Image (cartoon, rainbow, N blue to C red; front, side, top):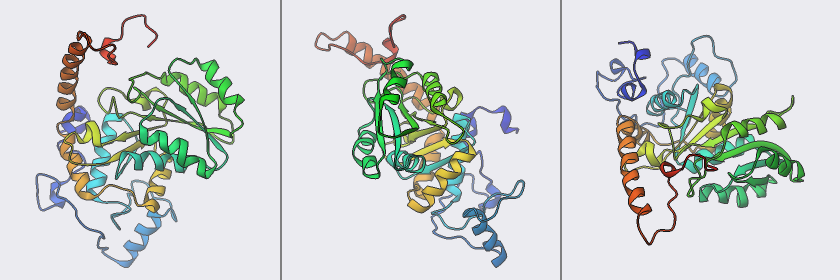
Amino acid sequence: MDNKNLHPESLMMGFGYKPELSEGSVKCPIFQTSTFVFKTAEEGKRFFELAYGLQSAEENEVPGLIYSRLNNPDLEILENRLCLWDKAEDCAVFASGMGAITTVMLEFLKPGDLLLYSSPVYGGTDHSINHVLPKWNVGHVEFDARMTKEAIIERVEASTLGKLSVIYIETPANPTNALIDLQMCREIADYFSDEDQKVIVVVDNTYMGPLWSHPLQHGADLVVYSATKYIGGHSDLIAGAVLGNREMMTRVRGLRTFMGNMCSPFTGWLLMRSLETLKPRMELQASNATHVADFLLAHPKVEKVYYLGHLAEGTEQ
């Protein structure tokens, strides 16, 4: 069957997995191993050259398996399947959502840079921006959903904390569900980009994706997830993911290798299990959320319900 004619929810059952390589097992096994065997010393040498960027890959050449800190069959298959939802070129999975977020920040921000971020954001992200990044002399400027593009640009230009390098957005925001205009953020990034440096847009898509929103199709450079939430879906794992084009993901993967914060093979296997039911789970959760939100909206002791399904036509959001 031609995989190109199938929707992502169907491809989650077997995409990227070859049973003939695993004793005919219908389901992908858990590759619970630290290292992998090379057929020859020359093969091992070539694998290391590609893994550490010492040589360029030839056409259709893929990195070989070396060590589970670099790559692992469970993680590779999982990453390939996650790419299908966001139509991304590449993906890297992490031990947690914060592992994914901080790796992106550390790779694309350096001392003297400025981070522009939407407010509010997840508490762990907020702490990293306000208390961890300043230790590396990385400044930050925040904005909210009510601000215009012109007001945000003016705020960045008035800052003396560094040169803008990254725009970080969480939309809908945690916990207010405030919506940030992705196209506006792309335009701001392009406004501050120059020949020496492209300002990148990073979107935390945990609340909406990977089913309902695809920021890479609307101007984002990288998408991050707490895979613990919808993607995992069973409250039995902690994981994160980053998706984007191959050039940027090569940098993300490189730092992940040396920080050692990839997720384990077993967690990867659990996430593949979860992806098989991602769409029906999220659709049912959305239906249930509507009933809960409607109940709360009508409750006399509830002043306001922050629910996207209740947004009225013509309101600011």
